[in-house]
Length: 293
Image (cartoon, rainbow, N blue to C red):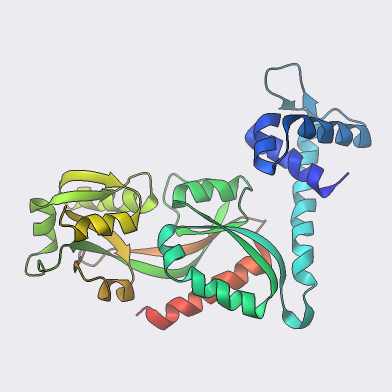
């Protein structure tokens, strides 16, 4: 039995087929089959019912998947316990939303690399909803996302890192208008509802009985701001006060009181991202504390 074969077993359980599991762990389908056969020979039990089109876990297979998850979690924590003089070591696969990726994460990674030279972070960008699903499926150790918005995967816990405020952004020179007036009279560039921020914005607009003239639907905040800068419409985006002050566009508070969202460190209940993920969270909290008011 090897750690890699246990990871392969977990991938099959998550993805539902040998081929998909192989793609997830970087193996061919035949290599996955060989690892499964080796596990079956070692434990003297059939792990999958192969009589169906897709392999189905037997009771023995389900037991091994459950128990091996604990083994892998303990193994992944070993490196962080071996660092010298308080330094952490190991690897964390971390998902990050675009706004956090562009704001605090680069400085956080630099600081962690200096304090913990043996630590490694593999960063994956995405939207909150998809990152939450990847944490729940064990494809990510942790993620920096918007606070949980329903529907969301079960079994996740979150730790608040900092918060953003929502702003109605418009081309420069339109600050003499109200936020509501801009939304009712200007073409609207909508944050994609597939994102948690987009869902929050959509819900708030409906509650305020505002029905803007939708011009575009986009999922990238930088692209949205570029469209606004070019005079193609107005938008609602989450930003820190620091980002808003350096924007160069009209930015008016959205909502009364102004709507906010929490940015959180998202982990699995009972199987957190470990000491390295916790250290990342603390660094981000410190960085945000220097600029948020």
